[in-house]
Length: 264
Image 1 (cartoon, one colour):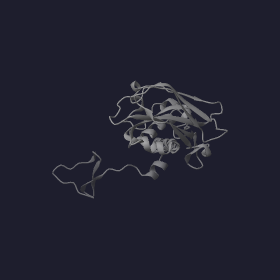
Image 2: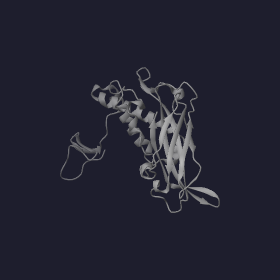
Image 3: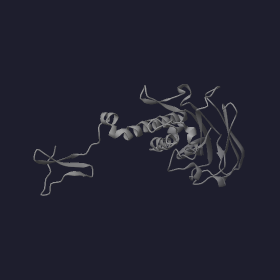
């Protein structure tokens, strides 16, 4: 441990460094928090432990959403998407029933938190595409339809110069509710067989200069029947600008956006 130098000897903590006296000598070291074992066992850290448990549940909800989105999560995300999504899921858990540290993790407790969530914060979907999609679902919750009555060039903002076309991507991800298990000392999905599943569909390449009417995208749930009531279906809509070159459509990867549009 390094000794303090200089005429003035300190005690206390300053800017992450702990200063104290040991055996008549003044010592400085990097300040560290309580150990994991102490947090788990010391009653003084009960709230810290409970918050950690719920942060863990938020991470699991976030992971389930991303698993269902699969390649789309990787295609449209920014660097901090996963941590931002976990933060939103933490807010959802705070709306759940139960005591701190064991509250239910269920997207239906606060579905609006996910609507408008941007996979890429620097390229918001709603600031790139201003057409108004509507989302509907059948009674058995096995088929989702996204409808856009009209889409024109005026609905596209910040169009990159090389872009000639645009393509829409619809995706869904299923997320079970999670309950705290005292026996297992962890949050677990109530319906693991229906958790973290997904699918996606894309439109054809749509020419930017043309108006397009009655765009329909249909998503069929990977769960064919008996979808549990506490399994949420998150629905996402994304956009990619394309450049037509030698009769091929080249995605412009810096001009992609996707956001949550429904929780069903």
